[in-house]
Length: 246
Image 1 (tube, rainbow, N blue to C red):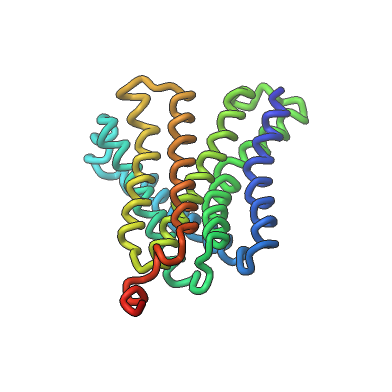
Image 2: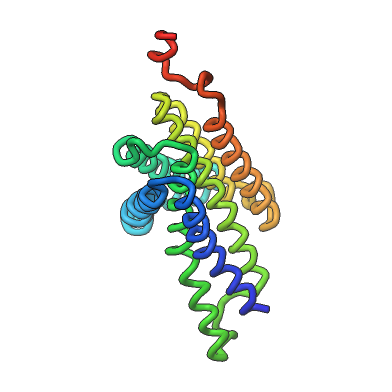
């Protein structure tokens, strides 16, 4: 059962982003570039900037160690810094590198690249390593069971759903010249989702199932909001300068 769960996890981490890109690329010209910019936005903002700061810089400061004793402060700090890093990277990519690629299809590819590369780089390798251990008869060395592996796979689906929705919000804001409004909304939602991972278990005793349910609902609502914005009638989201001419 562990091997089956690991194969399912690998399929989620690698198969979902790649299959999604293949579908979008057939329907939307330029989807591949949007996907790559989304992947780059995550890689730079998290792997090259935020995570190294959290691991190697902030532990040298006493206030950071003290803050970890307070779930509300620590959770909000982690959530808002994650949102600040990733949503700002999304805004930079949308504003300067996705010019002319601001349709719903581009936004979906952009978000799938962002969430997909996170799964590919941070979760997928562990699942591949686990599958190899099982195949060579070293299953006992893998540090978790099949249930937790399936939970991790489900979490990646919810995370990719959220990242796609947040990317749509930021891209829509840039396209409609309301960048700060939608960047701030994406930042708030991102902070809420990530902060909950620390706050809900520590302060309210919420377990894994509750956390995953929260992530699923938050991700689904964020994606639904992003899609609804892009599907609004054109007259409902014309720039103010264009409205003045009508």
